[in-house]
Image 1 (cartoon, rainbow, N blue to C red):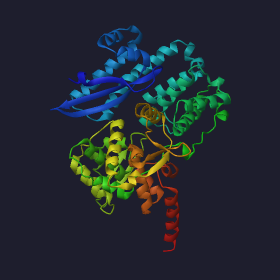
Image 2 (cartoon, rainbow, N blue to C red):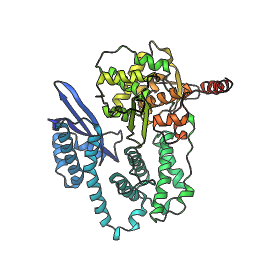
Image 3 (cartoon, rainbow, N blue to C red):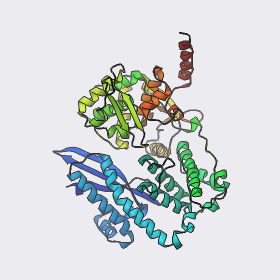
Image 4 (tube, helix red, strand yellow):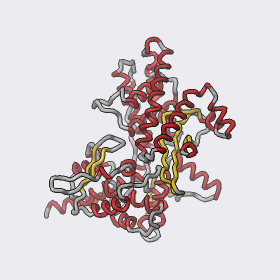
Length: 472
């Protein structure tokens, strides 16, 4: 029964504080796993109490019968029932599970919000003056659609996730602070806190942008925010403080595509998904949710094309499958191989398998062993310390300045597939940046430029080639 295959977990190394609950749903048929997905829920639990509750069947039963956690328990059981119903009806689309989970938590969030508002007179500004409270109100609204974007559209799933992550860090920083209390010191203290938490500079930059947007939203709701907007500056990220952004060259990509692997193995399936990511210039979330309908499109000349409404942003992307584009052949081969029933993996499994694939491939493709100077995030630092403690050896090489050096095969992740496709398309000089945006789904050329990865020498040669082309 699916009940035996629905497990609720939290993903954190912290020992205290709060964390979101994830529903892990698994189902097998004839000994083969046919469903294996993990869905984040809006249920948030106390980490210490959760860890105590899951120690044994007795502690879990005590937790289930504790009235203090009635709201969380009711949501968990409702989510379990929703997942059972979907799995019993052989539904494998992860978006269906997200929708079912959101339907459960949306009603609970509104009920919680109404309950909280009763504690304050006339749902007054006193409640919303607190930044954390306003975030509760705002995130509930964008999740259930009662608060729309400036373009009068619903917030995308990716945007909602970003806002939830921002609230988690803000609550860890200071849940008690009001808008009127915010000063320049708040800005510097928040940045210092995020650095102590070992967040990457890109994540810090994203959180600062969220803060600025939040102050504007609060101001439009007639909440007194003081000088928050003038105080809250932009956080500039230097490339040296970010993870190295690289891509597979066309030679490396084709070597991966033609790599001999056991048919039907996890490595074989992940390789195919990663390659079609590169060929279509899309995020892995959109690739793993593709259906035949994404390919059932034909232009006025009868040429097939791929169309997707991207999960993260809601933007549309279009990729021609014309025979004149070399990748079209490989895209069609992969589609035929799976009959449009594409495999799906969670992010951790997918990324680890990609690294294993490329590590193995590096034995015959030496360029994958090229090392890059890169910043490392919190999780990598934990791994480095564990390696030193357990084996006495460094996990990564460090240069004379203490910067970590990692091989290319170890830097490539799921998002590198999208970066690879965009960069290779750009280097062909057949399409303009605006035309590549049509393929990638980016709303502006400026956003697209962040996905074009080339070293300094490559950029130099690229400029020279453009000058040469002008004189032809």
